[in-house]
Length: 357
Figure (cartoon, rainbow, N blue to C red):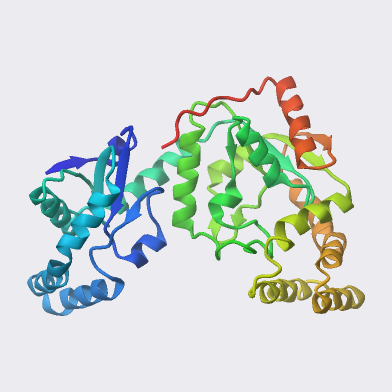
């Protein structure tokens, strides 16, 4: 049986990773790019675990065999359909019985795959150990009031081959009360860590990176201390845009793509409820509720910026040690162009990213 370590897995030029854990295990955390072909359903896994606990290993193995046997042809066919090129890698939670069994079945069918030693558990241990060691030691941190389009600026710079870390995308959350609008409910810590490791791999070799000035917690995920330290000591660029432009930007991000969706009004209502708990001014509360009732989202955003987000922003920037470079921009495209000029002055060049996995 061919076996591969996590370290060697990342050195494979082409690989197809098949995660045979149950759907609930896969959803909780997985290797980016892996395909879930579960050996057991969530219910079957629970049954086998209960039998193991109460009747012992032999009885659990027998029950597992009863569950799996009828599935073997379909399971092998599914795995074969995904394996079009490169090395095939199979893993489960600890690289134990499940992955060994599947690889044995595959070999009988003439398909030869690697077993990931230690499984997902070894992968997670590896990335948590490696993340602090592969963070570039210089950050260029983008600041600016809500709505200046910092994420949009990062995406523009990424397309021009500048090394960026999009932490909001990794967290599946935009980092505010309304941060999951149009997204899932946000990624958990395991998924965030996996995507952060992947992102750091992709910019490996760069001596700097661009990133937003997020607070340590983004939705359900927390950034590592080592990353926060580099950001706090970084070069700070503060993007300024007019209030009107910021409202327009936020309407384009949070309203226009989603306002016709059946879930939208309820999501906005829940967000406004949270804001109202923190706003004491009776008139502001009344105006927010009125704009909500009228679905006047543009006016609502204006009130939120004026009386909720903007007053809270300046406090957050005090944690950053360096001076701030001010950029005055009409929109994210203008901001990106001006930041590129500033990066050029600082001798921070774009690079061709070749470390994608």
